[in-house]
Image (cartoon, rainbow, N blue to C red):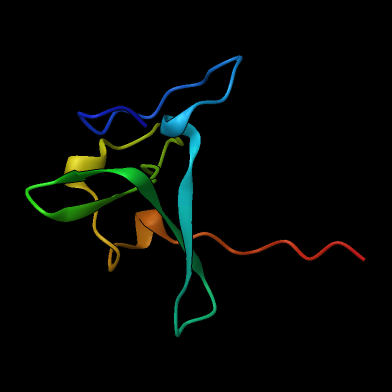
Length: 74
């Protein structure tokens, strides 16, 4: 995620690739940019109903679009 909250792919990892994983009370996980905030608010990874990314500036921890189910590998 870049400074403006746009989610994008990279071949090489840098600070934009770091996210904080937050485990919510509803057992879903959210992912906030570790590097960037918008007006002091965290910017979250979120997808719309077609699977396209939503800008981090418009995402909130409470939105269902930013909730992801963790996958447990055994």
